[in-house]
Length: 457
Image 1 (spheres, rainbow, N blue to C red):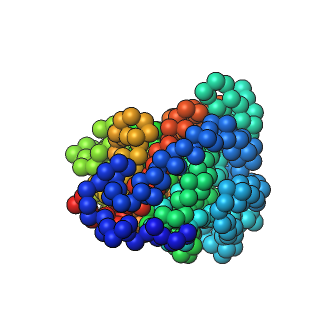
Image 2: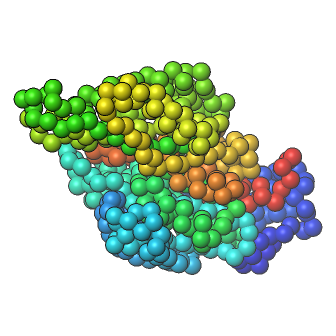
Image 3: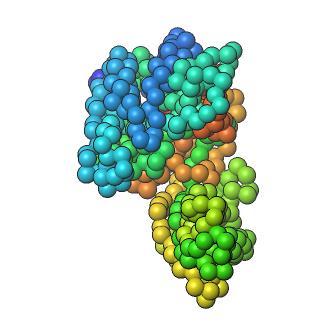
């Protein structure tokens, strides 16, 4: 057995090439064989009551993004909770120049990342959670920043996206510390801002700066306890501007109506791209076969016009292009520009000006469903829930991509129904969170063994 804080290099001369028994380890490795059992026993001892305490505390901090409210308060809460659980904790402020590059409008709001760790050897199994939430909006029947418990249901902004997953990972991390997981590699958690605005000033900074370099990553976003996301589609966002000629509303023949031009352009663009996409389909697994195709959504945001009696001289609309894993960003951008040019040709002949401006590019990313972490996590989920999870690609965007694009095997697995994310009266299930916590408690020792065990086993 390894010394406290260091890795195990084998048990009684065993080189991890023997048959797996019990919890999937060689017969002489009693400590490793018992770690899962001890972690799960500790989780049961902490129970749903401790989970509710954690969830109540993090929901009560209104980390609304944009602009990035109460981030300092949240960093203090997370540092306190993880230190009390026995973890070494660092709080890192994202450099101002990084904020000015990616979010200049909100650069006056400091951004903090919190990193908690036990153990000093490898492998490192890392859990990453974002702590920012979208604004609550109107229409809530409950206080969005006060946890409400109604039987098995919990309500509050972020209980699905993703303070529920964050509290679940914190609970499992506390159980891991009680069980002595630091003698079997390292357990690391990071808590980052700004996933809701792209993640560049959160996870991307941590990975690019080298502040974290784990072997394996699990992101507790709400995939549901029966689903593991092995990756996500990419996105290409654009603003498309249409300029006509402003005039008085009583003499529209003197103007060139930018709204009418925009409407024609948007319809022609959407129809052209839909035709192009109709023959494409990803070979990767998706939960819904419709998700396996490229998509475009036009008009998610529209701006322009001045007054009811003014012929509008300017309008703009957005295009949200989603890429399947087989597509490249440069090709997708070239295709979008070509489609805009084709749709705009009749308008330009009438005197309109049409311009396209790319506002965001995020490549698709995916890891193998047969990877070591995928196998270990699938086994842990099966033990915790009674059935094997689906391993599929997420149609949306995930912070997980920053780890995957850096060559780290990273998966997304967390509690909740994502249809409640960003919704009024956002809700999650306490029993769902406890099931996922059970899978997390089993995943660390399995992943740690998988790293050192030959792939053929």
